[in-house]
Length: 114
Length: 113
Image 1 (cartoon, each protein chain N blue to C red):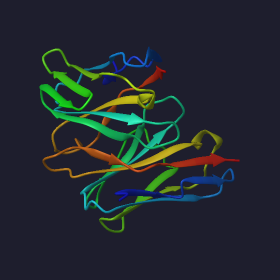
Image 2 (spheres, chains in turn green, brown):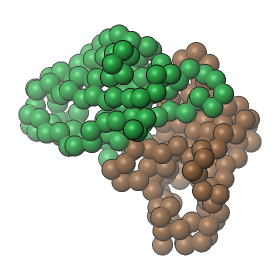
Image 3 (cartoon, rainbow over the protein chains, first blue to last red):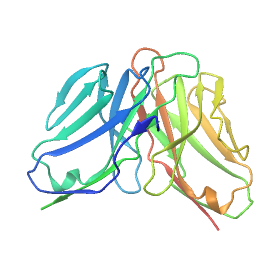
């Protein structure tokens, strides 16, 4: 089983729809959870950062973490064509020997159709 | 306002010719990472530094080396690039202690001819 699973299938939605993305993971030591947005040929841009379980909202974006199920989600409300990008989940264990590594999912390509 | 800066943005090198990619940061972060990302794939961690401590991933080929002469700079050296090394190379930083957000540079796209 991979450490982080993210179904990479492209996702096309009409403008204004809610986009729902998720990742599962196997390493129970992960405590920090991040979502990155990556436009074509650019570096990943940090969108959301959550520590441990819970929800976090920032404008149209909501991140949810359920540590008991090892499942994280990202929701994008009122999606816009400018949201078209690849979304990567990433996670990390607390600081410790060899635990600075950030584990990524494969990424979801999202296309918002005007 | 760029906080993690990678140079160059695009690099073309010949097969077997050593190449160096650079990364600098203004965040004063302890940790600096190098990732390799191929098309439609997740970034793959090559190695990272916590301050001066170097941590190599077990599956990183010996062809890839890194240097961190000071807090602000980190270099990726590819000793003998092969066609399979063509990729986007991403540098990232994080504080290490406490907060764990990692911030990425814009990447260097390496082409091997």
